Length: 211
Length: 126
Figure 1 (tube, each protein chain N blue to C red):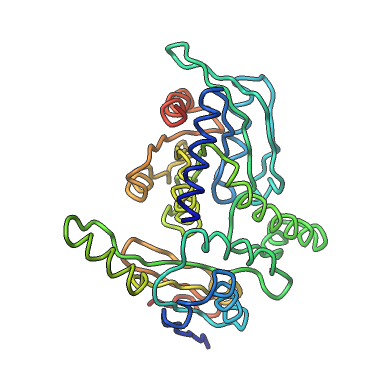
Figure 2 (cartoon, helix red, strand yellow):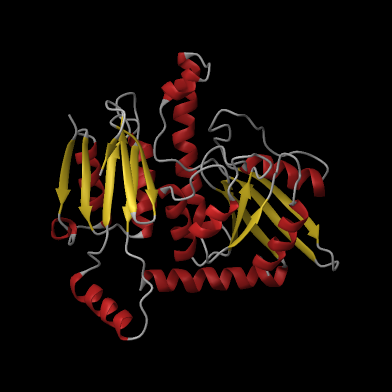
């Protein structure tokens, strides 16, 4: 009963925002999938400035970062306006020793681990406020991870429209087919956020998902 | 040595979500791998991750989680039958595996098989 009520409320809120043609768009996914790189690409393309810092070490984004009022246009000249929410990567484990292995000092590694745990909690809490979500997955990694499945399941349960961005298609090990096979019911677009490959297609897909 | 603890669905069926998650997490924190009959609700899975993050410290570094669930591609009467059975008996299908991150290095899940890699041995398969 509660979930039905929640779904109705979400639908109502989304319709309300639909009329305003302004939505809260979240970037979700596991750590190091390229959420912040994609956030930067979107902001550079449409605002001429970057949004988040990026790093090859996981959990670089440990706090929710929001960029208000981004307006994008598609080929037909249609406009879509949204607030972009870059979220910390969702993980089930955070080991400070992993950061030490990547060259960090003990104190910094422990601090980063603590902040990262808080980041994961915030990401999950913020799910309820999203009106559309882009799930950013590393296309070189196994898509059948439980974190991915849990994220997708929770978005479906909340009736939130989803677009999957299969990132890092510029890498040799990238496997789009595996992601499409893992999530056949969703729109999947292969991109390289770092090099801007296929981002135009990504924007077109975004218009389809956030109607 | 790796210890597996089986949790039958009936043992957690009537617990509240919070109690169910705590029950599972307490076992995992004893460095045991939980094999639970059935699965958690989607919201409970997210809550499990959230509570795990709150509990992380220098000794407990999180969990590895995996769920095997049969593909629900039935149609017609079979689908209705499944829904009725689930409503009456609870959704006991599938299996949930939760292991402590300091014991389980990773769980690889292909749609119909699970491979569990532990930290102390190079490779262990289920």
